[in-house]
Image (cartoon, rainbow, N blue to C red; front, side, top):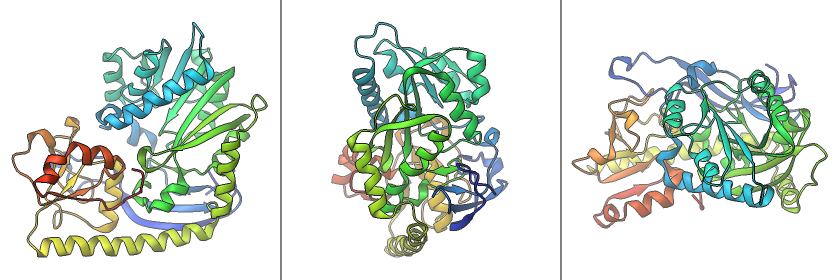
Length: 400
């Protein structure tokens, strides 16, 4: 295959997580055992350093309709509020008329915070269910896949364009990036929020690798992509959300000078060897050790007669469950807040989902798949901790 970023054909296998189902396809009872499996392999581009999947599950399958909702988690909404406030204060303070376009706008959570600051907002969301939820909440939303053609039909520009947690999803990567360039006002700011591969490797957060995430960016690789389309990163910082996400600020090339903190982050990548093949080969070996340690922990718990339930049913959790082989021999249930997932089963491992507020009993141990919201989870469940329920985090970054 060709590199998704630079078109090079010089690619090397860095990590093989085996055949896995599409991890956001939570199953109805009649679908259990019928789900298709796809290769989940990570390739390294020897030309630009980009790491990427070599197999694409069609976007219409993954994003035409799904059950993920941004607004379910308070800490994510609060993160979006801070981003909106920062963008407004830094770039559009005092402007009477201001506009924002959100790509992959989900249920409108990010745009609601911009609305509160007086912005004219527009979301573009491919999932029918979530787009309708946003519309019903008063957030104007197009139910489409964003690309250059959509921008040409809109025929307008925006002061701010936001893409939170979607830029690594893009099957039409270059059409989308060109669409952003075309829709961004001359002095506008594109805010790109993405899982930071350097932190994924440092945290052993391999569960963030799944079929929806076609690309895994460091600063070097996303800058290669942006520069190809006449855009340039001029500032960035690392936020704790999702275990380590980069918040990047982008403008048209030549409009702004790179900040000192961006240059420091670039240097940190170089010093750590974050864009080198050897780093990813070592990452694969560390994942194998992590697998052995997790299974040993669960074996000890079951031998001691303890009940273990999964806490949360995030999409990424299914990568971990399937690769580790953790099914109902270890976890009786996955406990979930999102009521769209009531009565469903996890893909591959077929663990039943139950809704948290409907529980009538408790386990001895929660195996926390939604580890990226560790602080919120522990704060919300102090009463359970006081009663002796253990919360085990298979991935445990210091600032989650």
